[in-house]
Length: 276
Image (tube, rainbow, N blue to C red; front, side, top):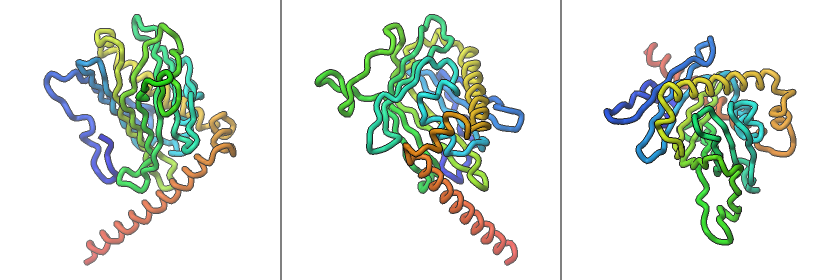
């Protein structure tokens, strides 16, 4: 579903088939032309998928990654979050971690959702995808001395009454754009087991939740970015505890420089053809 650079995205959400349980939503994030196109599908096995994209958002990739990576601060951006934390940080990669997010969305008869996932990060700037990629999936807990994943014991439920959510697959790609890399185009796709009956999720509720969450995240992200240097996110981005963000800045700068060089070559070639 994610689209390599240079390919059209006009048909991202055009797939329809009789008998499929599909909900499509398109809405504006602001009055400046930024919008989200979202496509959701519910499956007979109780799982669901969502895909969405938003082009040229006025936030740099490094700041987008900071907003996502600092998992314990996600509640300042995403509604209905009750608790979020990094449960285990693997030492060989800053983006290799096990995280937990507990949320309580307004779904009838559902006390809340508890999602524990393995998170990875990949630098795909030099690939045709041209972006920084975040991947999450549910740990494959194996029996042994208690259930473990990569030597880490399975955490106890946050609360017994919460529904455990299996994050089968989640992929997000942030693509730098703009002359200085000051903008970001985001592609997102995820599939998981909801553990909530479809009958409790009428289409109007799904659409309203997607719009509410999307606009909430965007507006709060802009508020954080507007005062970034004095925010907790900014303190962590500019801190010395992790080289992650300095590396990101350097990689994005090289990517933008290379993209501008490619664009200049294309313009020169077109000009040569037109004057020939």
